[in-house]
Length: 97
Image 1 (cartoon, rainbow, N blue to C red):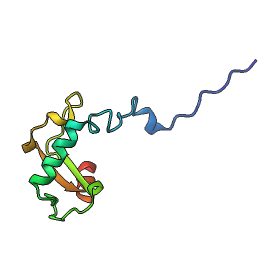
Image 2 (cartoon, rainbow, N blue to C red; image 1 turned 90 degrees about the vertical axis):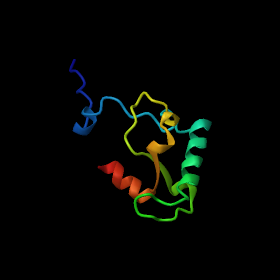
Image 3 (tube, one colour; image 1 turned 45 degrees about the vertical axis):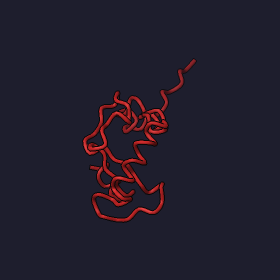
Image 4 (cartoon, rainbow, N blue to C red; image 1 turned 180 degrees about the horizontal axis):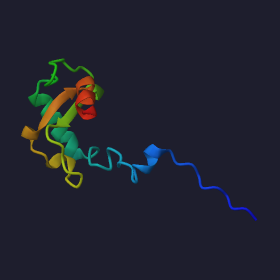
């Protein structure tokens, strides 16, 4: 009896052996992180540090680690001086490289 063929795996999946945990799994859903997030938004006056845009919607306010945090470190472990407020567009540009 013939054997079933191996399932197709696109090449880009082969390079990513494990998926990145969800934002909650990385600590961004915790009450401690929400307090840090609100402190950064207040400190920066609701303005994007890169382009100066005044951010009106909470969903468009991205608190960014200036220096990438180690994966094992809790999200809220970064001191406020290591965080900045970015708008959605600037955060996307910075994260993309």
